[in-house]
Amino acid sequence: MSASLYIPLANHIMEAGLSHSKRQSIIKGATAMFLSHGFNAVSMDKIAQAAPVSKATLYKYFDSKHDLLAAVINELCTSLLQVMDELVIDSGNVENNLKTIASAFIDLIFAEESLAIYRLVIAECYVFPELGRLVYESGPKNALTLLELYLENVNRRKQVNIPNTGFAADAFFSLLKGDLHFQCLLGIKAPPSAEEKTVLINQVVSLYLQGFTYEH
Picture 1 (cartoon, helix red, strand yellow):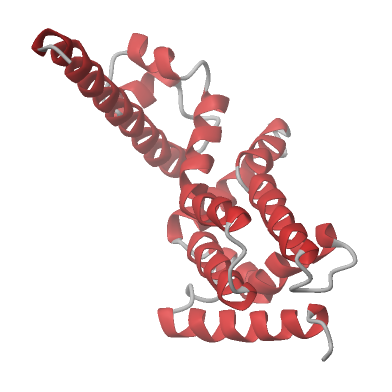
Picture 2: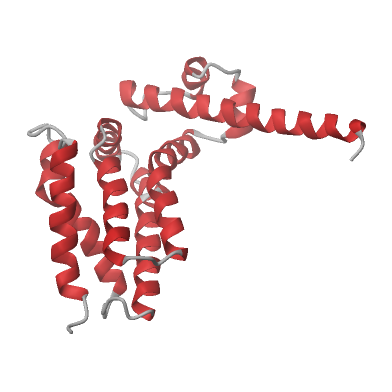
C-alpha cells in the first residue's frame, strides 16, 4: 500500500473514533438529564446543552427523544448482550455459562443507574405508554431472545433437557430478579453486595439446572 493511501485510511479511523465518542457523549448527557428531570420535562435543546453538542449534531445522531431513550437503555444492556451473544456461539460448560450470564444480568438490573431508569419509565409510561414498549424492545426483549437461543443450542446438543426454552429463559431471569429487585426498586433494600450476588447466582443456577439436567 502506498504512503498516500495511508492518509485517508487514518483519517477515516480517526473520524469513526470521534463519531463514536460524540455519540457516547450525547447518550451520557441524555442519561443524566432523563434521570434528573424525567423524560417529559427534558427537551432536545437541554440534552444538546448537557452533551454538550450543537442541536444540529444531536439530530445527526438521534431523530427524537424516543430514539435517545432507546439508546440509553441499549447502552446499559450492552455488556449483558455481548456476553450472551458470545455464548450463543460457544456452548461450552452450561453451568459456567449460565453463571456468566447471571452475573452480567445481576450487575445490570441492580446497578443504581438501571434502577433509576426503571423507576423513570414506570413513572412516565402512564402518560407515554409507548415508552414501555420502547424500553422493553431496546434491552430486555433482546436479552430474553439471546438466552432462548442459547438454551435451544445446548438443548440440541443434549446438554440439558428443556421442553420449552422460551418459558425456561423467562424463568431464569425471573429467579435472578426475585423479590429482591422489587424491594430495591422501592428503596426498601440496598442493591446486593458482590458476595450476596455470588450467593444468589450459585443458588439460582443450581436450582435451575436441577429441573433441566438429564438424569443419569
